[in-house]
Length: 188
Image (cartoon, rainbow, N blue to C red; front, side, top):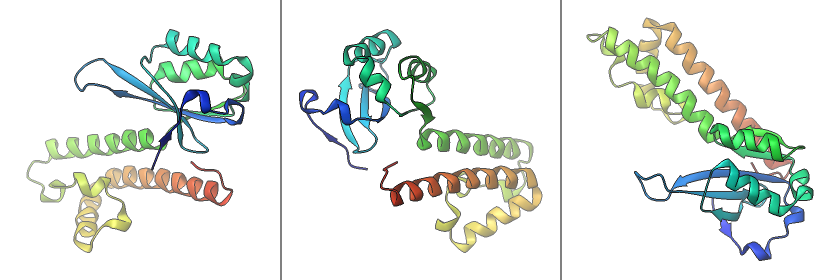
């Protein structure tokens, strides 16, 4: 996805109805973060902030005013609780969402945890070897060999297959939501 950035002074704040927020480590291994605010409708970067703590963000949005905060209909962030809590506090009319990227990471971690457990308790079982990327990969992108390897593992452990199917179901829901949003000319 391509993002653009324009001067904060050039932004028409009254048109922004859906915002996303995410933080990035400015220097890997340090606690220096920058925060991006994104207009989810245009994919433009609204602003880049030097802090992510609640007090700083609360003051930032207070400067934009109650009218701006009231016009926000959707707020999307990762699963970091301070972002979610702050959004509930300052955007009274907004639906609060967790972005699909972080949901997918979480779901993949659940599957990988199950895979690791099976591998530890069944060291000699060939069907559980080399499964990590096959479990994470979309089934539509798999070759026959990869599909067969999953089938063998699923025959030995139906619970692993159930987790895999649940994750795929969530991905299908995300995909359908994205397709429907594009048809309605709403970018997700």
